[in-house]
Image (cartoon, rainbow over all chains, first blue to last red; front, side, top):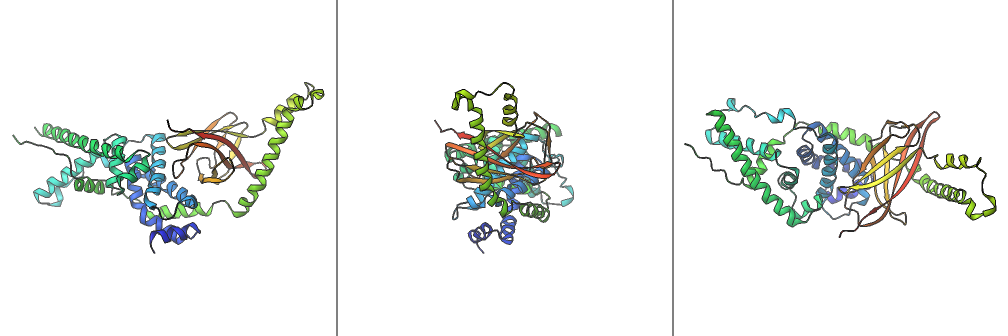
Length: 185
Length: 200
């Protein structure tokens, strides 16, 4: 059954259709919420609240429009509210760089893997203004226009924030790499 | 000396880093069980039917209150004696919870103030956003008050995030709260107007 059919059924209160919608969007929703709340437990809470609100407000959802940006906006608002309340630091486990020594990866892959590890740390340390458009584009897979709708800003602003975010990432990666080199010396 | 010349990361690199860096552990089954049980606790149809009667009753009560408070201007010869005034004040302050609404980052922050000690029930609070003609714009719920106790004068803010931005204009928020009383539980309806200002 396609998504619009699921939405029509869910609007009539069909639990199986609601569950199907939940399962197809929960992964992206939890990952997105985590990148806002910094914490897996609160991300789960935010997503649960978001789905409850979404299903209860489904009557106001305009059929034919894409579901994901509508749901993502609710997830983002719930997550931001939780973040504003608790200001949790990033989960401690996520601050640690995983040990890759036992994996016997080829050197090129190890370098790529290390760079990606540094990259996620750099993304986490971007300010929310620049981190959120990046997360919504590359994690949630939204278009710039949809990101604009979710964040309540024009698509042109989204474009410029993404540009600045990538530049800041390059700088942060250079800083992280510089720090590691100084540490080894 | 090895030179590290970092260039702007590619789309693929950012996408992969985010996918790997957010591979967390959560149980979709547990989450669905919670969501499913919350949805089952939604207001029953009888409550929806009763709501129109409550609105009518509420309007009648407000009309009575306005008449009582303006009694002296309506009937100049019948000014209440000082002894009667405290009764009027007690009646006016009867609502156990009052609300104030402000808009923060496209969310409604609804500040509730307890006029007396109140104990909220375990059910979710129903939040409706209405237009001046009472047509419903949005309906959502909040569990932020569940089983909470507010002492007299204490405040608590709950939030409602409309699914889409509200157009500038006049609105009214309708809260339906479950209160625990000595006799069981009762439903309290609170109405509070608010304005979404136009963009300059």
